[in-house]
Image 1: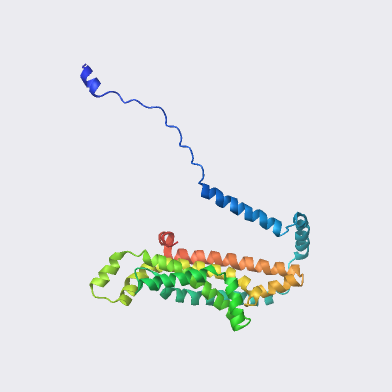
Image 2: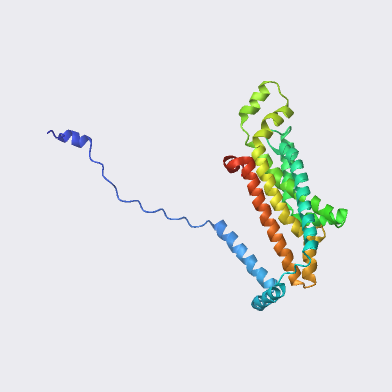
Length: 287
């Protein structure tokens, strides 16, 4: 048996394990962060004092909730046919408004996306418009359209459509910008015009994401349409407001249960359609 010489041992000393590194200490927050936190806390405390919020009202809340629940059971089932008609109107408002919004979102997204817009400043302008539409709540849009076109479902449809344009237009534009350049360059090399490129490459590659976003918009619109009726934009919301105003808690609870069932069914049907149309892999990439 041979052993390494001393020279070899000196040239290749055994690796030694150093002492364990101490954990890095977390840095203290910056002074600007501390100032912002202090300002927000100050605004919150000042708001509590200025709004004169009474703790006594919080202690009375369980009694009021019990009064509502005792009056809500059993739910009033005699007026279900009337409620069903109003609920159907709510679904129709959501569906029509979503279809209009999704259809108008496609050209808006093509103008907003950097790889399909004909003019870069136009893309920024359209993105600003979509952000503005999305920033205003759908309930405010409903109030605006009730003032513009009067009470009824038309105001609700327009409010839903505008809200969907702001929401779907943004996600459509982001998906269009993620389309791979290969198919686009291949069509452009054949002399295809911009419309042919959009129809032949951009829209097919974005179809899965567009479908998933559109179905989510429909779910969102059904939930939103139930509230729009409270300001006179049609649907079941008006019936719910009337029931609470007249303190008919059994009627109000029946309407709430109907809204809950419809919204849950809409979510389940939407998820099922997405799985059937897109498949698990495409659905994961689309969301």
